[in-house]
Image (cartoon, rainbow, N blue to C red; front, side):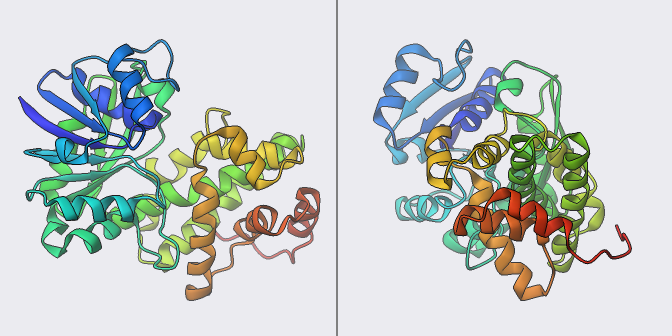
Length: 334
């Protein structure tokens, strides 16, 4: 039985770890920084964020990272985008074998502009590049853990790691499409969270379905413009990792970014909204990264700029709408 070391036990991490364990040929040793969560999962096999779904297969929960990594044949990561670098610095300090490493968090690192797989390589060393892969696409933990049909994208820096991801994660209800454009897959998964916040704000202001449709369409245009400027393939942004993930995240209250936007529209501060959700809102972090890259590549991102001003400078959401609607009209180019 192969051992998989799993880092991060939020709802998504627990869901994917359960998926891998349920296949029956893996032992999952899952690491978290929270002793109470590890104890609760050990005693009940049920995640607090996913009530009614007990763990299947061979799963062990620990706060000892060395225990999770030792002799692992694969390492899978599901921590926050801001926390990925310090977690992998801890991984490096423990020393790990050259084994496949799968990143499942969605984000772009602030200041460096690196996608998260690049952050892992920068910390661990260039020799890990062919072993680092990425899993992304339209998926909610609450649905995947129930076995509802889901399709996502597996990518990486080598064909071998892409094949490994597809073989490891594919189940009868969880379909993995291979894609060699790791940069595009990562950008699509990260930037859609910003647009989801904007759509949540629109929902909270009761601006209607037409407004949301416009935000999603123009938001996809912003994602594509910046992604292509950074070297991504436009067709990747049109696929599951881009448009697919955007459609899902912008239209459901299961999305924490969408809920965050609704709370902002209702008058909560960014801090209050974050506390009410109780989980990291990745779009708020990635919004900073996106605007840093937009300045570097001279790409206008009006929706992202409006979201940033609401979150970080307390711009009234209704004023942000007026600013967007009063922009100079140009011919539509997609």
